Image (cartoon, rainbow, N blue to C red; front, top):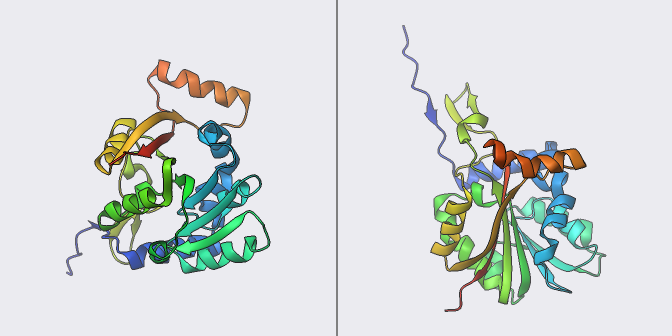
Length: 238
């Protein structure tokens, strides 16, 4: 009788991450968070935007949020995926507010500076070797006094969305999340990388009705968590 190999967690690599998100981009674009919540993200964070802000969408994916930003602001997209960047470039090339679409590798070459960097539902995907370079890149992209707006699931239990591959006998988070944050731990991560916290708050980006939005305010009184976390910060003067 053959012994089965033990079930183990998948060890993510850059290649596996790229493969997963190319699959979602090609076959399930609705899986991108900003495809569903872009309007609410802008609505809840616009108070942090300076007038006539120039904006970078860092980790722009297929450009769902970027397209909404471009309706009223000059903006650029940055992403890991060449396929995503080609799609974003083609979709927005004729928009006069579009500043461009850039790969992570191109960031060292461009001289652009932004008032705001949106860092939406991306920090929870970062593999360990990408954490420090990502925060350094965001800091370099911001003008003096600029702000980063980061969103991530609020105190997510990663095991709740774990799936199993029967071929490899590996388990992994369905959407490739590799870390989870509270308001305190997210602020601490930014502080570790030389950002000062302006605000953190929790919300529900899927709350579109007045009734659902009332629940956002009431959940803490019943010791329930809102599903989404927002951090707003600015690079420390060094």
